[in-house]
Length: 253
Image 1 (cartoon, rainbow, N blue to C red):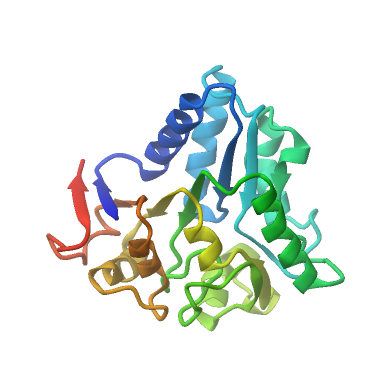
Image 2 (cartoon, rainbow, N blue to C red):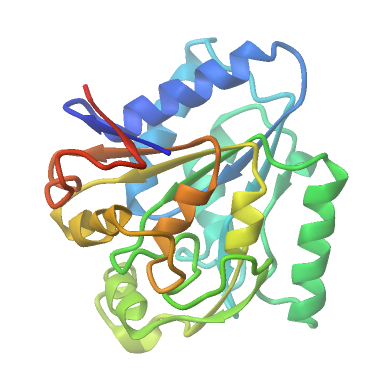
């Protein structure tokens, strides 16, 4: 895998990278895996800007989001349905039927997970999966200890994740949903290309795990198993990394 330590905005770099990938296929369909969370906000702002400038067309884009809380309706301000509609979908020309987000209110959550995997398969897989990095290293909502081959599934969120996400619920941890549906690490690794983002000192410990061999107790290390994975990190997020790694290409820009 590769790590780019950036002196510029990680999120803007990611948006420009996505634009280049989409534009490179012209009018062909392109399938994106998409994150939510605070790290992605500036990325979506840049994608909206590129669309408004006529530099990015979403007409042939298909999207699959990483996760959704169990129990929150799509209209809830902290649901990821609401987030995506606000931050991207309502501002670009993506067809509604091309967008996919797990239904955390499904009557049968296991069947919802299986159907999500089937939908990804039906479009031929994900071309580029974008993700953030949890403070404890989780990718999507795959917490430490989750097997790397797991598919989309129901997860009980770790205490560290509940604490981190309380800031979105008026800092009241009791209001944070304790369960979510999430794509599995195996689902992410099946994508043809991975682009992950890490910003700030709070992500430094997680990024530093990339000095270790792949280990399910350190979820981010799964990226080292992918032949085309890129992590974008700012200097703070990369501050605990060794200067060089034998199995990772580190580029400073």
